[in-house]
Length: 76
Image (tube, rainbow, N blue to C red; front, top):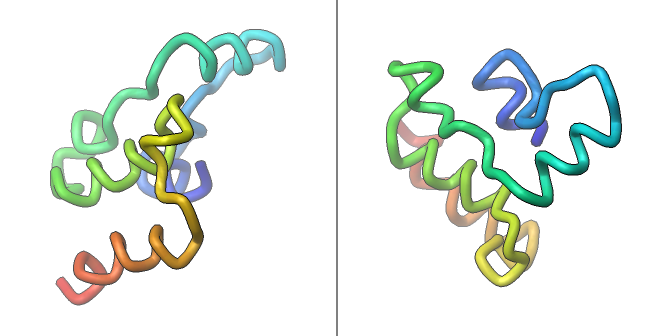
């Protein structure tokens, strides 16, 4: 969520009410970052989407796996 915020300029599930934010997290996906910021590559956007996936099985299982997914993109 922090990476999404840094790239998009707002949280993945903005809203004034915590209940609305939680409902959004349960029932929807945030817009892909590359749609909000065309200068963000589709590959980075896909990694961010995977990190925010609703299904835990679709997320990176560890911080090391998340770092490994992001590492090739950092060299660009």
